[in-house]
Length: 93
Image (cartoon, one colour):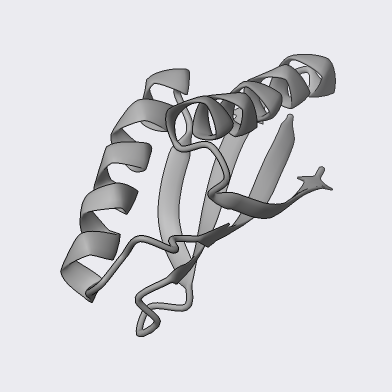
């Protein structure tokens, strides 16, 4: 079994309030949730223009898990271009 953890840092330049930020994050979570992953906001809760998301997938093959997490990054960049500042993948065995 392999666990892939994708840490994502986002910059929401157009967010004027935490409510705006939550709306964008809710839309992103709904979109990437379709990839059969778990998503949670894990950092920058009180900042209106920054967000940290954690995305986790579990599988039997690292290659499949890696493709899943790459698809999540691609979907975020497609749905909200320019939002993604940084992404990093960690593997837990």
